[in-house]
Image (tube, rainbow, N blue to C red; front, side):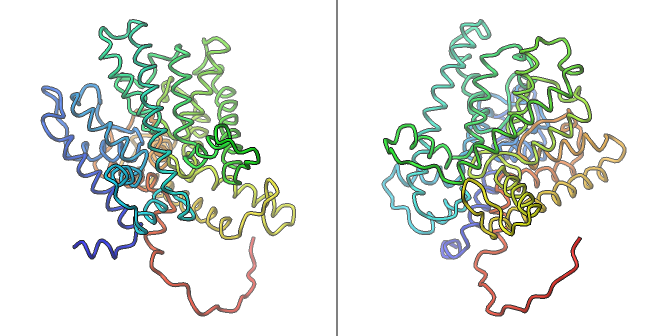
Length: 449
């Protein structure tokens, strides 16, 4: 058995690890110790909650604060960390803790799990991820806990820290779960909670390689340090999407869902919605009250998702950026897209179009399945929103998740899982171990367009 596992491609081992994790978490959530007195949960709902937690999505068919005990909440926190920072990052922590050598197979698995192109610097990246995660979560837990306590939210400091820790990990891993019962609607006017939450969401969704380069730039001490093209493109694309989402949501909801708020309240709510739509799922506004146009806008943002090698899902920011650059280059009569003085390879361009179209196919497939499984129950916009939320591992919902049938729940589980492992790893399942063809056929022009 061990020999078979060692011969298995790294991508399949990672997928198996995530699947085992989802089923183990589901079994733990079914235990009586995980449930509050009198609460029950079906296996399908336990599996759905587990898949949502491991894929750091946030969609749930049960009320977490009403169903799970403190032990069950602890199981969810473990699932967030397992799914957020990645199974191979946790594996690296185990190997480093016990002084074991990280071999070639482990490095390949880390590379695929983190969606990297080469093996260099992976161990240092894992150390950074672990150290940064633990320090940031500890500081944020303390900040939220003290704030909740001194504002009189909770009677004891331990209860405040408990809620602060859960919210911190949920926000940083982009999991989107909450213990408040209505996400962050109670904090729609609390600027401190919203600001720190947005900070955690952005850090969790921007990608670990970007965080590593930012750390090197500010504290590395290298005078001639240069950002990689990946980091530059990621930072610019993320900023553009955040600005686009904020302005778009404000324009469409300023006289609707945002009516009655102060001007700065409208801007902050629009900004928070733009940030959380990328992959987090925490919200300060009831999504069932927004307009159809805003539902479409948020669905687009959820479909795009976060950046590669981050805790978010979707087709990823750089995928969309490369496609836009390729379209601009083609409109100008250029064969290869370029940005920041660098050419983007044809392989990366092709990969971006393949991933984007695959994402579209999964999105449309999910919509058709839910429309067939749930006939005449909800409109297309609500179904699109739910499917985009699952694939983008976001977790926002118009409130229909708990009322879905078993087949629809299983369909969303599959979408959440693919969204978590990413399309890079998804395609690696089919391409690993295959040799490049020795024969190249002659080209022939087609009539296109």
